[in-house]
Length: 169
Image 1 (cartoon, one colour):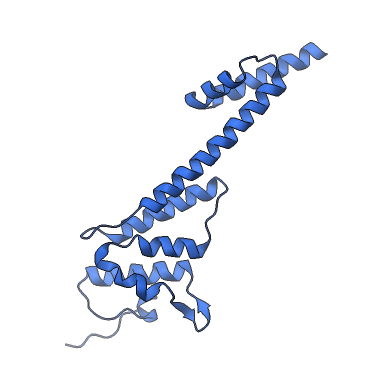
Image 2: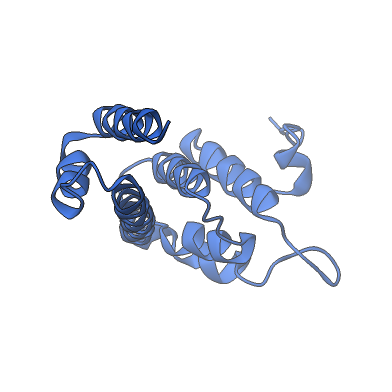
């Protein structure tokens, strides 16, 4: 019975080892080369996988912090990249709070749009209620689209809903 259990542990160890990427599998095999010590191999594997998760989180955060728009490029591209990285980060178990994500969106604006940071950094949704990340992104998106269309009309909450003010001819 003990031999059967040991064989199942070894089989499970090899199965998991084969499912890992090459770099991680080599790290696990080097850390716990004796497959007959199934408990030690499992512990080593879990420690390495946990460490890899932390490394992945750090890499995603660094990439998120480095994102910065450049003058002449579409700022919405950076906002989409930020959203993708934040989603990947959340999938690793690390969810950034909305105030931090709002700050990252504003700090990533290209130099020519830095004045918007001042406008929106302390903006309120309603008096006494800070603006949500969703509202900030909607307002910035609308503002960028209006600017791209060459419309100098101020962006208002009505614009954010897709309604444009009447034009005079």
